[in-house]
Length: 431
Image (cartoon, rainbow, N blue to C red; front, side):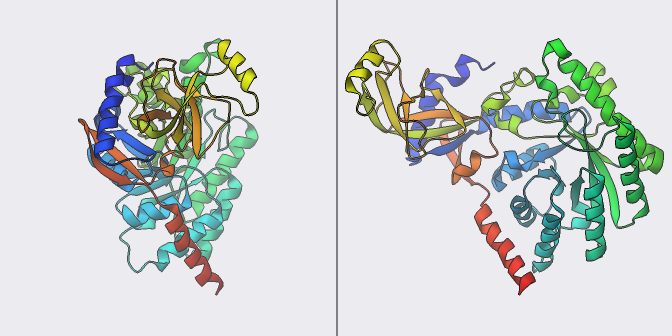
């Protein structure tokens, strides 16, 4: 899946030198800008076949990083999954058109409007730029009550269950079809609720084993489920109305399936007009899947080596430790790094792995090294994050690496400062 040359000794030696020159002597999240650009080019080749692109903000939680992707892709569409991050994006990227990526409690939606109304000024217009995701008839009724209480209009995007089975409308049974029809009738009758689209997420597709049909069958069934729900919308609202809807699908592991230049795939997903992805651009290890073989890992954690340990021992068991080293159950060489316990796996030096002597530690984590390693104190161990959305937030700034140098530092989202703003709004409400 990942070529050996892409994670070579020379590659990580260059990044190490760049980090030392930049004075990064702490655990640092690094993005390789050239690889990021190459991954983005692969994504844009699909987008330019006739799709809109929505950038998943949780996977790239940095305003400068999002700005860069927005500029390079020409898209102002974002997807948000967390109220504090929604506020942050509205404040710093007010030009964005934002679709919620999961159904939010109606109290969270209420809190957003309280916060937005408290702003001295904002060019962000929720009536035109914000789409709430609704997954059930009950939640739609809650949002209907909110719209009435606030005397404002809400854009509603319906979540469609296309096979992932974690919620959403579908047409699998008479009851399900009835609930979808009832929801559509509410949207058609209430002028405060504006239907702006559908979202069908199909992350399961690329993981379906061949013995139960494989990816192609799963994708076909997902598109059939999506289109069945869309037909209910067309029946009530008309084709002309539906031509203007956001019909969102796709994810980092499945976006290549929507290439409209592929006639076989296009025949199944021709109605989809928007895909959402972001993790594919930095390719954490959870995305080492066959659909992304053309992408390269572009994000790494660099952790300084604090201590080298020869023949490490289990506390109070010196003799047993020697025996375990002889039979290969205990490493002969190890090191302690600065930090640790991240959702990440070591990728350099080769064959480095977590040592189980002391278990996980967020302070100084021990890693087993090859017997003939060349690591020295203050060198770096490199890790590949398993995901980006949680891991990126654990580092203060992202080191942007390009052509042998750290060319910039991009700050991450700072939810603690946003939470303070939320508390101020709540305090005003209860005072």
